[in-house]
Image 1 (cartoon, protein in one colour):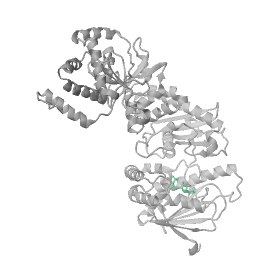
Image 2 (cartoon, helix red, strand yellow):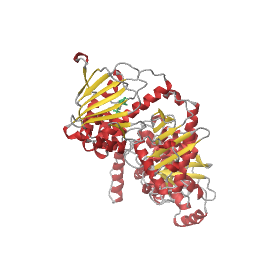
Image 3 (cartoon, protein in one colour):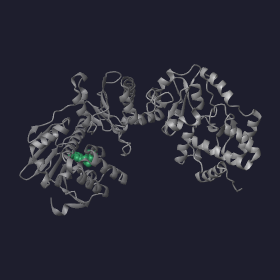
Image 4 (cartoon, helix red, strand yellow):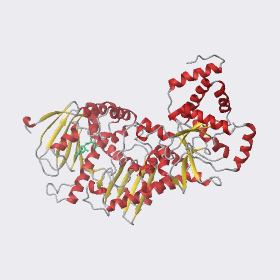
Length: 631
Ligand code: ADP
């Protein structure tokens, strides 16, 4: 290659940052660069194999599919060669000069953080190639595309620039020539390399040759029968396919013949990478046909909400030359997706019954995906509902129960499933909405996540029973035997306001609160609290309103107009208020405003804190025996 043909280029800014993080933070676990380069080589080989099955390839078709590693411990160089798909000039530049990820600051912070904590996380970020600069003084990448176009050489020392120029005499594939740093000479040792390959790259489905000797064994274990596979093999395979460093939480290996031939081996990891701040996960299951990769990170074979699964699905019924686009609406793939999804849900249902604690762990980490499924996957909604878990008035704090458990102990005459949202168990239990439930001994779910009401709202009903939020205006709880006794007690202790006085008080309060409330009504469900806010629209709960408002959608839904306030005629405060209305209307107004604000806060809705605090001081001053100046 002549000097004039060689171009020097700047790395994309993001790439420079990644290089910096990789070189400086991963220094202690440098071994993984070998794994990353071998994986890239294997990917390239897999892609070539795929091409060769659907195209008639003339160029270099005799070159065997393999990865060759040569080292020179005198010159301190390491060369990794694959006979895969290779790269054209354009590909070389895009693939090794830029980073496909969004270059957000957040991404880099997370990457730096992950790099510090666990080097295995690095693979998740797709910055594998750059790890070579942990050990390399300089790197040359010589590559020639399978299409037979001319070869190219890329070279860099991991600083700000790289060069690209033509390179003749290459075979198909990619050769990576690494000049090792002074303190990284061990990577020119065949023993070091063999150890690393055994550890990380055992499952690479192509021969990996070190100095002429094959060091890996080809193992597509999903195609073998379950009885022959050890737990260790399963775990090793998981680490390979899931780019993971730990053990999986669950694994499911199954084969089916009808309606389609399927071999599937999927895992649930221990961690949810989305909550670790790494953005939306790519689907983690790859689609194979007879061990040939058809679709990596396939978006077609499982619904989106199952993107946390890692593993492989192999079906020999699929046409090999199918494109990514046509996978989406291929009838076989749709069928495959249906079978897989049903099987995975069935598996979770079985596991939930088999090992409650492990399922609890699963729910804590991945419950959010199940909830996403309930809101987005109409076809599987009913089955998915069996997997939902919430706390309830009958569950011990911190533990959760299923809808089936709830239904199993519903009271006689009860035909609905009740729930109420709140920020914590304590907040819900001290709020007004559960008072009558407690009194009548009716179980109620505590939905403690903001998203829960949307989920149950989407679900609508379970086992033929309507799901009802306890902050609905039209709630009517079934009478229970416990209720009859207690109602008698209540009557003795608290003499409620006369109906006419209560009605007139309600009317007066409504006038004062104006548009903020649709109506003020005597409550038939409050036991201790003086007042509460209820929702007139059956489909909207206070929790949903809060979220929609926070996301700026509140106005579009015309919110703030469809609420009633209920007041408790047996509460001392309400009884006193009826008298105060005559004797000190000014002060009575403050009390009504404060009642409204308190009820809104208990519903989890916003009030104006400044106005409330001022008013609260006036009330406190009165309570302390002081005189309040008329405003
Ligand atoms: P990732 O492999 O996670 O996509 P890398 O930074 O390791 O990220 O590689 C970037 C891209 O460069 C790859 O996606 C691939 O397209 C290309 N590439 C890397 N190594 C090879 C190789 N040996 N042969 C062909 N293409 C390669």
